[in-house]
Length: 62
Image (cartoon, rainbow, N blue to C red):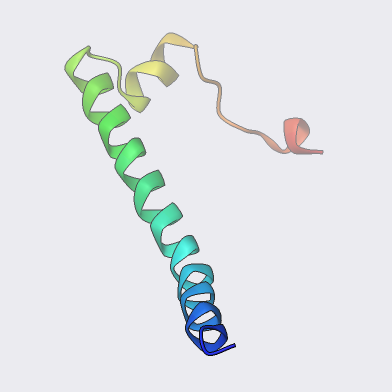
């Protein structure tokens, strides 16, 4: 029974840190993808110019 408070503190810490870790990992993955894409000449602007990515319009949203 003496270990219960430490278990709950560590569980609380893990629950509180999980979203922050997820955001940091997502940000890192996005930055790496953008860096890799820009080295290949694929940028967001070039994708829109080539028509591979089409901008959202109100008709597409609704």
